[in-house]
Amino acid sequence: MDIHFDNQAVIVTGAARGIGGGIVEGFVERGARVWACDVLESELSALKARAKPQRGGTLEARTVDLTQSKQVDAFVREVEQACGGVDVLVHVAGGVRGQSKRPVEEVSDDDWRAIQAVNVEGAFFASRAVAPGMKKKGKGRIVVIASRAGLGVSLTGIQSYATAKAAQLGLVRQLAHELGPNGITVNAVAPGFLRTSPDYERQWQSYGPEGQKAMIERVAMRRLGEPQDIAHAVMFLASPYASWITGQVLPVTGSPIS
Image (tube, rainbow, N blue to C red; front, side, top):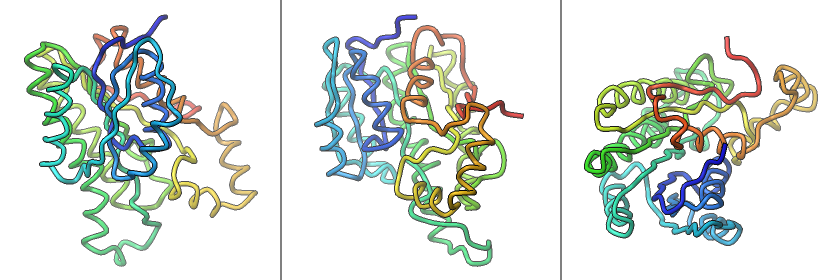
């Protein structure tokens, strides 16, 4: 199966590191014109330095706050003007925003909203911005990076995160139904636990050696995932091989999902 994206315009949000960075590298190695955005400017620069475009692939990076719809709209317009449209949107931006597990009565309004804003509103803003152009082209791919937490109880213990990831799946299903007649597929990838950011590394270290060993032993493949594992799933869903798959969530967890 030869998956490539020669000359296709691909937007990746939350692209600076971890899963987002792995997705960017996967697309540029397969010929895509990737536009990466994040709020982490220095890490975007590091991504540009390590990425290895092939098959004519290119990489542009911009600092964009996905919680600000005007910034998102302006970024998408820039990509459309440069490339003639957007072929693929991958929304990765999200996470727990530096938060950790607390009793529900201790969670402030602002902490609740901070996680909802980037995970749910960010996915909505980005999808809304690319939809008109994809409709004009009569085709497009939208892939949202959700989480195993959206399918069950979150290991983070963070109420807003678990809720936001479940909400992303509702958004994916609704957009798939709406945009399908326009040749646009909308799907989600739900990763298991990955050590891909300072927040998740802190969570990993909190388990201690015995807890870490127990977590790995609960994974059927007996290893934690890597960004490339998620990137491969995303690229399949963005490829012609997934042209009749929409409104679905693909768990990428190294284990069966019950």
